[in-house]
Length: 240
Image (cartoon, rainbow, N blue to C red; front, side):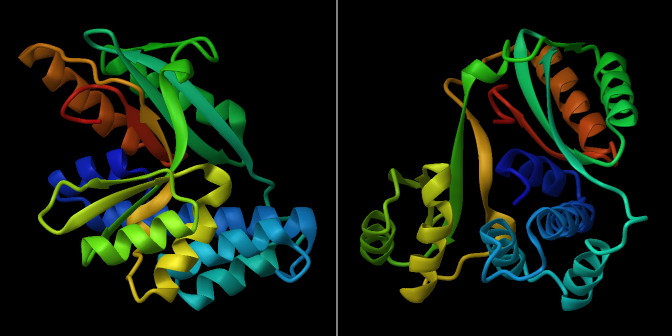
């Protein structure tokens, strides 16, 4: 999951394949970034170990893993930076936009263009982010008792009903995310990498009228279409 918000909208628009491509692209860049910063050995590089675990959950093909590990030793390969942008959407909604980019000037320009064209406005750092919390989010199916026991034993903050029958949403602190994923797997509970990620969750949804709702859907679509954008989160009710 590149953020449940992103996956949810992409699937509604029939873009599941594109969403997976974004996820794979992001994971590849994270692998290269982590290996370049701390070395290619996951035994001694904790950050790389965490990213490779996430890649395994997402069934990232081995050739992508290998290719990006090799990039870490290639001095001519691009260096990536993690950037978070914030913007206001139609009707007073807020958006948090994650980007892993090798050109921050390009990313800022393309994100700003997408926001402006959709009737939004870029926000100062922190002015939107305060309304969101950084959390691990894991969507799983199975027996409720088994899920509760495994998740809470590993340090999960909460287990909530999901959107689908038999689905549960597990919330964790960022530091406990990997441990909870591992414990669920040990308990025989399948964790899909597309439905498990660190995300920005809104503290409260913002209700808007029908016209603003449609405009927010357009803004979400435009942001997801930006190559450098890896995930988008909003507090717009119905999209959050």
